[in-house]
Image (cartoon, rainbow, N blue to C red; front, side, top):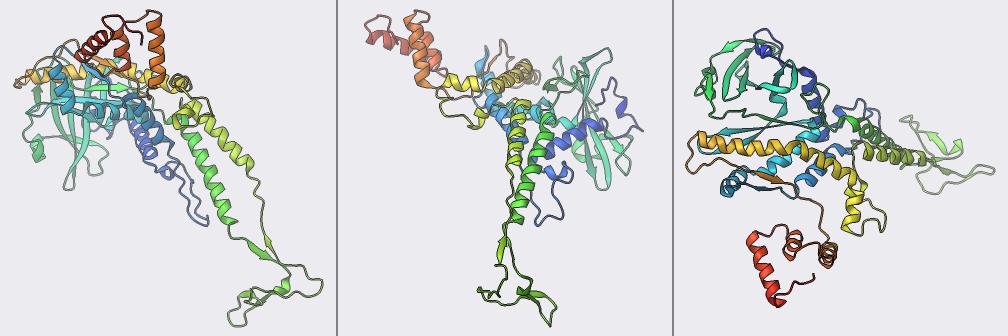
Length: 454
């Protein structure tokens, strides 16, 4: 992967697109995610097979959706001093879905990008394809961004161009670059009005916001400290081998699903007209001469136990490398997950990974919301207000065992380690402050003012 320390990669004569290795990785992972594995795994389907078998064992999509479900299946609780503003911004932008898709990008590509912008009416948070993101970093500190270039190819007739947004603190530069006829090299900058939909843009605009309007997120960082590591690379070889084994097993079973009959050579004759070898009789009854061997069906005992053992071993390695718990897919031995706490213990590797991703993205998600509100204030939107004391609290997506939770609160109350209100808040985390106060009042009234034992 190429690390840029200047914007020189956008100058005339430079190759397009830049950072081809990273873009190639993104393209390959997109094919894996979408199930087009035969375009990535060479020779996955044999051309000389009785039928072309496409065994899409799409673990890539399943891994992506599993971690996104566990991370955001139960949307985070977001609060601020001006709760009305934060609720409006999150509702208008379907923020929970944005965060879900962001987790998917982190798993599949290692990188995700969000961009707050002003659409003329309100602040909008856009999810940017990481293929369009080309960061520029400090040459002495790869973890410090000095600019973000968002660049994508556009066409007008037979002509090809690159639309570029260069984001710097407080401003955005717009450029339109013409490509050579083969689209492999930057030719020269052209006027933005060359593409009618960009005619209203100015070469440079002030955002009114002190910082960037581009927020990159990453999975575990790669060695260069700029781009994240995707979760597909470590498991692609294992998934490929599982698919190859399953395809071979399926092809073998197809081959021997229509067995042949064998017997004395005298049972077959050549058709005098067509020359084709045919059965001597079209009847089901076949007469045998003395001392002739009885006809029989030629069958084969596949002895494929070793194949299935290998598949099981591969699955075990897949669970380890992807940090998956079989319990996440309902694969639990009888009696091992009879309670919520037991399920959490079985899910420990998977939940640890979810928590790791949450820790990495939480601070920037808060900054995205604050910057969106700041952008609305700078654009003089009616009723806009800056956000302060923004808090984002993750919530578990695992099902709650109400009986187990009630027993835990009973133990706490018996040990006088919690208040009635504290127990109610944990048993009903979605309850408002007013609901909790009202419930505590009702309990004290029913108990005659004495502290109840839950």
